[in-house]
Every structure is written in structure tokens, then in C-alpha cells.
Amino acid sequence: MGSNEVLVITGMSGAGKSTVSHALEDLGWYVVDNLPPSMIASLCAMAAKTPSAIAVVIDVRGGQFFDDLTKSLSDLSELNIARRILFVDASDESLVRRFEATRRPHPLQGTDRILDGITKERTRLQEVRSAADFVIDSSSLNIHQLEAKIGEIFSKESDSDLRVNILSFGYKYGIPVDADLVMDCRFIANPHWIPELRPLTGLDKAVSDNVLASSNVQEFLTKYQSLFETMAVGFMQEGRKYLTLAVGCTGGKHRSVAISEELAKRFAKSSGITASKISAQAVHRDLGREV
Image (cartoon, rainbow, N blue to C red; front, side, top):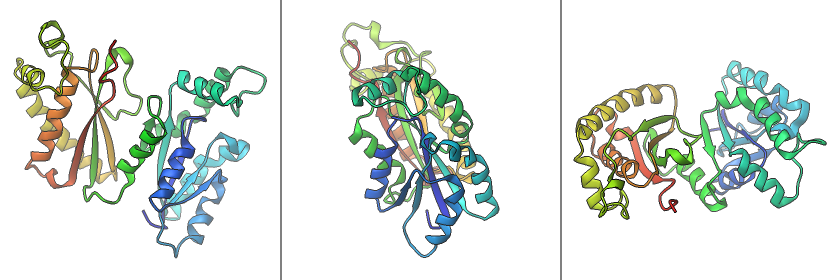
């Protein structure tokens, strides 16, 4: 990103926007916290001669100023200033825990409960969340993991046009809120019911071989890869740089893990039109979580 582009960081209070800001600063970005939205264009003009990428943190702390965000983003388009929106989210349970741990009130709490403030904020942020280019769920991430995720998205080391995070998960723990696409692997025979495979995971060859040899799986993967690469062309034309493909099974231990790893390998070996423009990595959210 250059000085005619700006990253708007917003999201739920307590979700980790400060950590995101610090991670971007470590990558050499110029970050301004709690900027009134109406001043974004002026900031970009002032920074026209700097090589640093620009990011601004805008959230409900701005009070009435925050209400100007939608109009200010529209004004940027008229001024030919490109913008991206990064929305940092977390589950209500995680946010309540964090506010209680720090003994700080929620900005919209008033005389009500913390959860009431969170509910008000979600309603107020619904429109900007739906327009976000990146959504990060920090519910299960510590500070270092969140910083690493920002590095994955915004590091300049990769020459790829589209970075794909293939995230395995268990449906019983909930669908990842930052998923752009969701693949359901529960149609595949479950290795959990095979005694010798039950204690293993999808990272073990025996489980992976079993999952990939299941009926129709190879045909499914081939067709899905072709479909995804067709979609990827459109994503890149729309300026998307990062996608999360969530791959789910019941517990996030066997099938989703094996399929995620296989998809990452297939994308790496692809000879299709998007092959040189996609980089993919498999990450396993719920692996090791089972009791």
C-alpha cells in the first residue's frame, strides 16, 4: 500500500485492535489511532511523500465522529484514494472475559452490563463489518498469535496476489467468524469410528490415507480445486489479497485436517492459470482441543 491508499482498522472493543496496530507498526506502517473519519483524506494528503503504508484505527471511542465513517469512506473513492477495511472481531464470551480481566467498562456500556454494551456495538458496526475486506476472529488467539496473523496477511515477503489461509475446524466448536468460504467434510466416512485411527489426527499418514481414499473424495477435491481457482481469478480482479477457506468436520481432528493439508499441497502443485499467483497454508484451529 502507498500514500494514496489507506487501511481502516475497526471492530469490536477488546478484540485486539491495539495489537493489530503494533504489529503493523513493526512492519513499517504509519498508524494513527482514534482518528476522526473526516480526517482520513487529509492524512493521506499530508503523507503523500512518505513511502510508509498508512493505517488508521477508527471505532466507537470516537462517539459521534464514528457516525461519519460511511460518508468518509465514500469521499475517499471520489478522491481516488483506495481503502481497505480490516475488522477485528471476537465472540461475546471472549470480550466479556477480557473486559472483566482488565476491570474496564465497555465504551457503550453506560450503567448497563458489559454484554449490553457489546450488543449495542455489534448493531452499530454491522454495516462496516459487512463491507470489510478482512475479518479476523481473535477469540482463540493470544497476542503473539494475532501479531503473527497480521504478519501473514500484510507482510511484503510474498509475491503472490492471493494468500489463502486454509483453516480446519470442528463444527461442534462453531464456524470461524472470519471464514470467507466454508467447506463441509462431514460427508466423508469418519476415522473416529476406526479404533486404531481414533487417537491419531489428520496430520498422521494413516488417517490422511484413509480420508483421501474414501469414496468420491478424490473427485470432490479435483472439482473443488477447479472451482476455487475459477473464483480466485474473480477475487484477484476485485483486489482481494487474502482469503480464509474454512474446512470443517465434526471435531476438527481427522477429516478437516487431512483435507486442509491436501488442498494446500494441491494449490502449491497447481499448473492452472492462478498457480503462480496463489500461496496457501493449512492452519488447524481445533486440533488438540478434544477432551
